Image: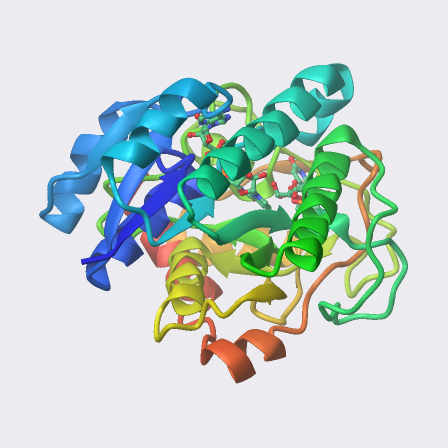
Length: 330
Ligand code: NAD
Ligand code: UD1
């Protein structure tokens, strides 16, 4: 059974990747410092996967200790999810964000090189695409005019990985540009569990549904979209997790660099999201319109055709199924 190291494997996306890896007969090994997750997720993953999960509580910037993990276990490939992800926090703490996101990636790459592990999947973001391009966004669309330290850190890491694979042909790099991951595993045992007040739409709506927050504040009502509110490409996190396995399996990680969008290819507005939540979950969501959030784009959705063609991957779950799974955590 191949070992797959997964940095940030206790986090929202990483933990769902662990389930998908285990289901597909890979052996996930988690490395996470629990800065934005909880150690209790490991037991939950063991319940879901019915397997013992190996994990290390470690900041991957700690190269010395990271090297010892690479020495202890063979590693087929690394899924690199570890990083900070809050856009507004990144504007206040840019040095922390660059240090953690870029610093940890350099530490990881150095350990991998030393142990002759050259296969890496990097968690990038739709945030790297330039604003104002025609939709749907293809992987070949322009990137790099990122406007906040979080997005810049993702773009800089993409550049580092591009140089790495350009100048050292041993590397096999896959850049996964996530659109908007939502929902949770159908067991309802694990979920997105960020610390603090949520900034993403669905976690915010869930907090309103649970009466932890009084109402949803919708950022902007006069965008040039179908109903004036922001449009995004929401992808079920289990589909996204399966996308990672699709990149690895069937010996697909050939040398060189490939970029893949992971989304559904369909856009949903904030108002549509509220409506579908209320219909499927049966809890009404009070909301008010407030001014646009700085840095938001009116609409963003991808073309997922490359992943379909090359990885035979396509989203299996629609927004209704995503809601049914969310119902299990309420
Ligand atoms: P998350 O915060 O739930 O998970 C990240 C995990 O990394 C956490 O468990 C955290 O404790 C860990 N971590 C952070 N810094 C670390 C370090 N130096 N060493 C070890 N562990 C560390 O976030 P997520 O939503 O699961 O996102 C995973 C990745 O995907 C991130 O890189 C994020 O930027 C990217 N991404 C997320 C989204 C999204 O909407 N969730 C969208 C696009 C891209
Ligand atoms: C945000 C981040 C992006 C990150 C992505 C996934 C910003 C500017 N962008 O993108 O970098 O990669 O999350 O983590 O923060 N909305 C509301 N009210 C809310 C929350 C959101 O109206 O309380 C709206 C937004 O204006 C947007 C949509 O809902 O139109 C989705 O927002 P969100 O979930 O934050 O995702 P993104 O804006 O795509």
